[in-house]
Length: 259
Image 1: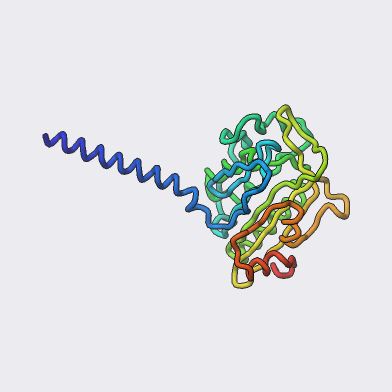
Image 2: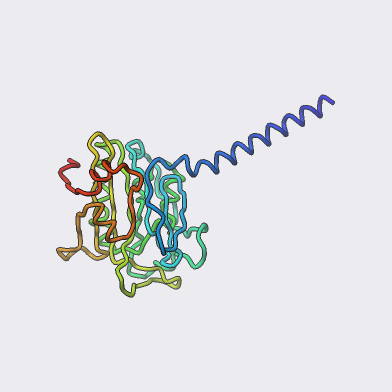
């Protein structure tokens, strides 16, 4: 009889532990969101994917993200996690056809991170997930290693100065027929945006737009207000800010505010 009660207690404890783990896993999707993601899009395919360090709005028609959002924190800048072997991999959470390595191979386009690997060195899962193709777009190689990389490093410098910044970036698709790569016809964006806000004691915001080119033309790179980028992309960024705060971070864009 004593043995029966021991087994029963162990079973109950195991069951309660399983329920707790399952509940924590389910609610964790919401608990990890400590930043303001864009409003749901209208008339655009959208699958929201929750990762350890970022959130994706994925488009099954273009087979690239609509946007990727994350909060970059100062404590996440000192990690020692290296890139995984055979780093890029397809995302089994989205339907086929979806991007694969074969689509990019010999395409003439680089695999362009949206949430960069350099922002995920603090955790092995975060690093691994940064190499999912749902966090990637076909990107001009010179842009990838040039202006886009410079903006990523700028965001890290701002994070060191202000402790955290909120970032949303993604592709811009002009009203035209788009280039595609690979058997799965991955859309090649014509440009990219990145919007950044800091909500310290002096709130500020800024937006960058880069054409998906080698950057040799004078108008391949722009600094805009976030409101201007909302008009260009049709995306409403940081929708839950107060009217006063929204005015401060969305209506002006001045690099001097970040120095």
